Length: 121
Image (cartoon, rainbow, N blue to C red; front, side, top):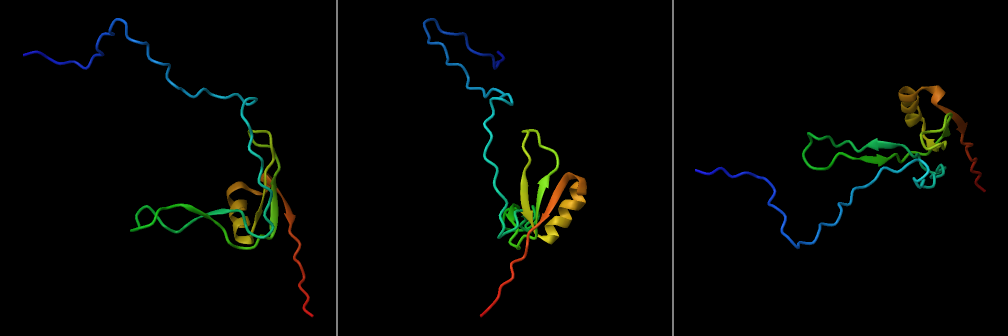
């Protein structure tokens, strides 16, 4: 009884060589094109929250959705990230408390968003 192996078959003579495999190369910091930073939104909080669906619930897909509350503060990173830029975003009070508990106060600077006084009449 013969045993089959999963070795490659020998190359045929006169066959065209295979094209090189398209392997993505690592880009250096200088070669990476940076996307423009999104400015803070003063009408809506920019934090991403879980949508409330877990992996164990029936139906739906666990994902993150943007918070719908009005922002009260704009935070800016104190130190630049790996890309050399400092990002900023607007947050509501509950999302600010989560950011403070996860990152600490030293990770970002605060700037309060002034409340507009609406006068009727």
